[in-house]
Image 1 (cartoon, each protein chain N blue to C red):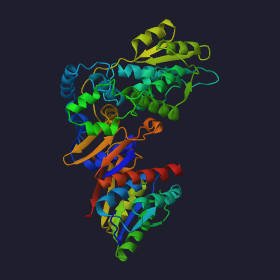
Image 2 (cartoon, rainbow over the protein chains, first blue to last red):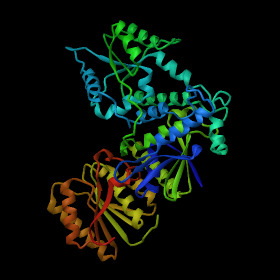
Image 3 (cartoon, helix red, strand yellow):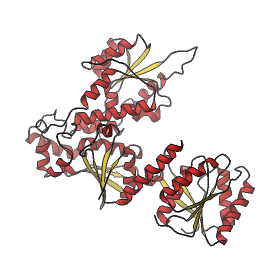
Image 4 (cartoon, chains in turn green, brown):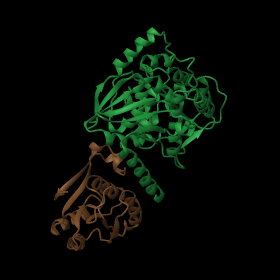
Length: 347
Length: 155
């Protein structure tokens, strides 16, 4: 058995090695298949998720589990995972893309205008800019409020609490307590924190790829403080456009005289799966289910979101643990890393 | 990866060295590493020879690498040098594998023509079906999107 920490973009190496025709994403903690993907036709083959979630909701009824117990998979957190992986259609998508494209203006001596795209916390949580970047030839400069960064870093310190969550009761009914103990301990970041790490991973990507500025506000309270912070920045920057998934924040921005682009959150639905979002979808589902088994017949590999001693940097970098009996996967990942590093060194 | 002592792999060198890495990876994954690799860079792509030597040896550690600079616009002179090199190795009892994927179209045309003229054992190219994966290392490309196509001969 080989165990190796991998990056999201290395999942494809494992998929290529185990898949002949189609593969299944399975949740070992709940002993259920979630999706079957037709690898050769580049599409979803079977959607087991809806049946699984309604089956799970019967347990929620029996144990009287609160809707706020987000550690237990629900329609809402699966919808969020699909959205983060760009597997759900966003309403009015072409209009939103055009509005963002139009914000980019080539600044010159004659035309010193700069439009700033001021982002809400939910833009980072939903990986919205990463998901649209292939459709935006020039990303406008991005402004991030210190309040946004504060909110996310605070959430990232939240730990899983077995006293509050009923997750343990649920997994006991599936007889998978041993697996549960592999990924859940007093040190495991809660679902809230895991979402925050996804947002921090997105922020790192934006910082490394685009022009990103930060405001220095801190100790902010509530969603309104983000809009208030951007309103203050208008003394320095003339053209700020606020990007958000939250209708209340959009109204508050309007009240404060800030232009906004509002993105409607899509409903939970069957995902659109392609080669382009397959790896990210698996990664996002892993953040909800903590352990996934990917299999095609007898060939398989396991992925773990958590392991003892996992560092904050590893969460932010999107590292996950791969476990497989297939040594070829292990070898190919190491070769790919070595070759990429030689090429990067050269560049 | 299995090594064979008597195979030589010919390839042009274009502006994307990863194309050669992917071609050799795809070939050697199915048929084992060649013992020799012979590259045809141009004056512009000669700088990639060293990096190619380092990368190819990651998965085919024992290969002997040689090269000869060609003029990418002079098709006839390219055909002549490719043909004589392939024949030279055939006479030394090598099995000759010619990959025409890399390089400018003029170079691919010349190498294909030379391979047929010199009766090379195998002529192949790597067919990438989605350009968004250009520049990506072979094992990281979804396998339905990439095919090793044997144009001539039996691998």
